[in-house]
Length: 488
Image 1 (cartoon, rainbow, N blue to C red):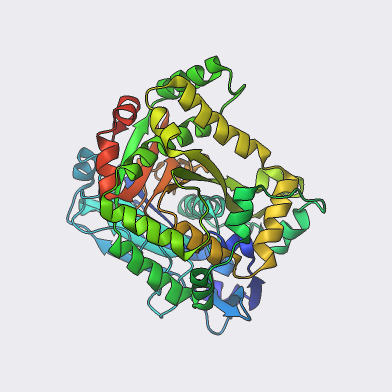
Image 2 (image 1 turned 90 degrees about the horizontal axis):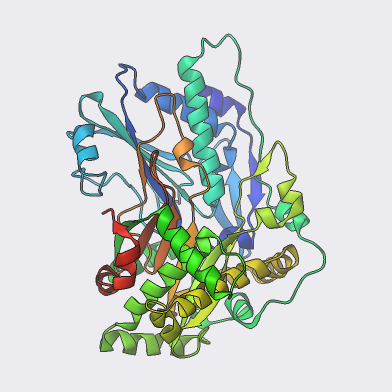
């Protein structure tokens, strides 16, 4: 701790629209590790010391989130740090029982996660930029390690970079005699690199994207006016009023290959990715579930439409596909060895009619149409199109709030993100890779995440977090059930 305090410097990082557009959500994962039979397995002193050593390379995580003149900043004040929340507890449950329970959320008597879906006040009434909870399983048999970071400071890529680096430092500290020092690694937190990577020429946004990022509403102005902590409290309250039901499903490699083959045989798309197929599957099943809503929900949906300029025509459904700008911007691709780990994602809307989505359950042609619509939209997001989104995100400081309001008032939607390619199962702290990684039991409503599977498994896990009535419909959806298996 003393070394960390000695080396940290006061500095301010200006946030931008890329940080705020997804700032309504946390990034929370729990990693389960099994003790291979070592007495010093992931000891408290080792984990904490390596965490602080890693924090030296990520000083931004000890900063305060502040808003000045409608602009966001993370302020690191060496004399008044906003230190991460780091807790540890002992469980009465042995690892073997957690494993026997397939690592389900109720395998432990108390939740491992210490945050809500949305970033909200921490122990010092401010938003913490890292939350860590170490749960030691009985008889030193294993560890459940919960790590959360809000989207204000990183996206999924940056989250994985931090946890993997912590694991790397921990491994070095565990096996090293300290005859040589571990060099500090440089990471880039300056948001200006995103601005500078944008091409000067920009493509105009299509109608749906223009409405997503160029609209304005009373709700949006109200959300933008709130402090980040108050906005977080409001969003947390909203998730409690409309609680989500979460489940994890497995989609095998054979299933993905089979569905891709069907799509390619129709000739509607020359190439489709795994993510295109998964996004189409999720869109079909969630749309059908939302369509089955009760009369009360229909009234609520109509009310929401009246509060903002609607994004959708009646009987349409929105699939908001999260895309990463990094691989689309040459200057960010060429950054080496230091990598930019701040916010660099946004959502691009894919709109289909609800009836088309429902029909896709029994029609290869309709399923192919949905899959190809995802592929077409993702392919259209070039560097120049990203420049147009960048302009929209940063033109108005309240842009993120208007987009958030539009999302809140559009019940007929699903947000789809992919976190399978960030190497989360590579987080080996020196005692073996995690045996299982899981998100929170419940998250935002109408949210889906493609996750990696553990060693010796193929395909993907898909995490769905939707309202109870939607989940009930999904669990009985013949198309979904035929192509997935319920994990828990």
